Image (cartoon, rainbow, N blue to C red; front, side, top):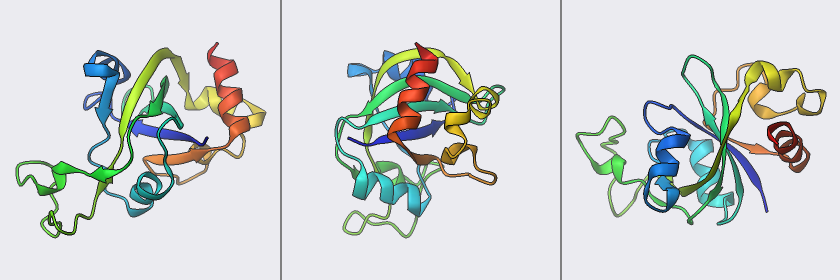
Length: 152
């Protein structure tokens, strides 16, 4: 089992939105970074743990616990000319962008970036590295366990 931190802007999809969705499951659309896409396409497996992170908001941080609920498949927003995630170079025969479905398991208290930075065991966590902008990052098992302890 692997662990991931996946960022979502809460005005697009929040942990509450995910919990309210059918089966508490949402497609993780709109990822337009090749490294993040490759994580979904090549490394994520059904059942992997997910830290559901609210980004680009007043108080960014981990807002819930989720899991990967599907294998990767083409992101349909790349084909929709009305979508902000439209990619004119993508075709159905050769899609460029993939997604996985994510199942929200529970909402947690918000664990902010400042709070995470204050935990010595998380010092090497990728989300805390200067200049990190990836929307999906791997999380080490000890980081996952430390965060779960903080949230319980």
